Length: 331
Ligand SMILES: O=C(O)CCC(=O)C(=O)O
Ligand SMILES: [Fe+2]
Image (cartoon, rainbow, N blue to C red):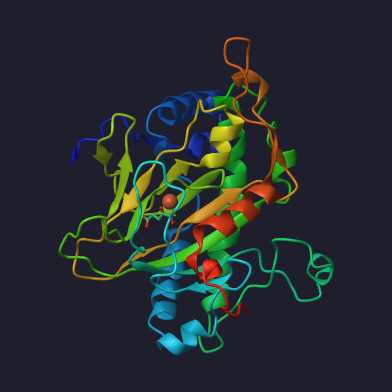
């Protein structure tokens, strides 16, 4: 693997943009545009999210996965991807870069916006929203994970104008589609995989299906990014930064100018590896349509308008083995 990522996955200081320094937005947007056209990965420094929040979330993840298996299985995901997804339940079947045949060597816990049971949208049974499934025996778990979730949603919203400007659009172009964004915090524990095995991954090559993803730096390496030439790079592992990657919906909005980049995880260490990706996506009712600045007579729209809710429904049916096993009861 090529370890020199010089320039391919740049470290961007977002402090000046967040502080509103004149010219900072345009400079940042230019850097974002460059790396989104290349690797689709970048690293954010000076983002303003206290490291204690990421640390608290990592610690919460470690405490959750250390619970006895039956306590975790009591929170197993149901029709919605909220709660515990055990090892072996996910084979990424939609990847275009690898024929994935073996389940990922990871277990996950999914958290979304923390609705109250009497929220009108919950009461009305609105599709694709649901109640988080909290472990009863873990004091502070909900607080730590939601504190991280809330801070990450705020950061993602503040980054949105930079991605719009990077596409040659007005800073508020995406605002309406993201007024009620679809956010997911996924806690992941990767078991050690000290000996390589053919086609076996902690997380098989895949693209993310949301808009952009934020990854707090894990304590252990393992994440690898596939360049357009087909080599695998490791993003700079600078403590306190976020690795950000573009995902499928940004690819669609940008008519493939910012195409999502396949990535994978192999935890070759002899310890558990933890990750806490935060997935930022448009609202369920948003209709994703290639933006005007990326469509022209010579570059016609490659995608028909797509409602995010329909995209999520389709994914749900494709990727998750637990839903394909006939007869299984879902919570
Ligand atoms: O564990 C990581 O570093 C990456 C996880 C990831 O790619 C994902 O959850 O989509
Ligand atoms: Fe991913």
